[in-house]
Image 1: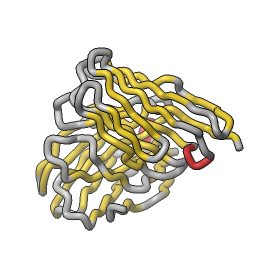
Image 2 (image 1 turned 45 degrees about the vertical axis):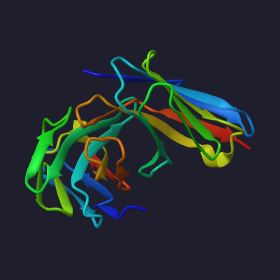
Image 3 (image 1 turned 120 degrees about the horizontal axis):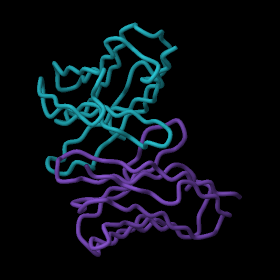
Image 4 (image 1 turned 60 degrees about the vertical axis):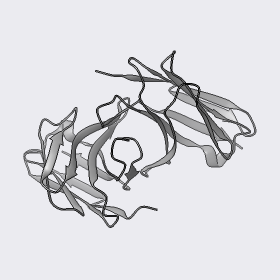
Length: 110
Length: 114
């Protein structure tokens, strides 16, 4: 079965700093999704990547998909306290169902 | 925001009792999902539905059953709750056929089994 490994598991950064979260799959990626979860709330869909080399941005968050490496990275530029939360990657293993990574907890210190 | 609600939001129950969680949507989306979230495990799929009365198992379906008699409602039942089922349960909906990941999530139900 497909597994997703996220790194790091947790991250504390100073406001204004850049950061990167990685998501590595044990199998071929047919679609990679990034979600954000604020504490005590449900997940919010951020973006979807489907093609190798694809890169998408939303405000100060950029995600890339490296199909050969079976990996995606999420980069936040000039982090703000509003970026704090749990980031989860999800993969569609061509089954119509999502498999999620274990999540990366981000804290941004003012 | 997608119109998706979960009830109850919090529940404490005792081992061996039946528990039913409800997910209600107003978006008329075809697909509905139940996940559980536990520390160190991310989200794991319990059951999902691809239409009224059409359901299938996810990766952690043992001890759970589901029913969907109407498009808008998806019920998750723990026939005899155990402490290992203490978790936060999320419902999600999707209308993206073939694209499993564009899902909208409910606010979650925190279940504690004593």
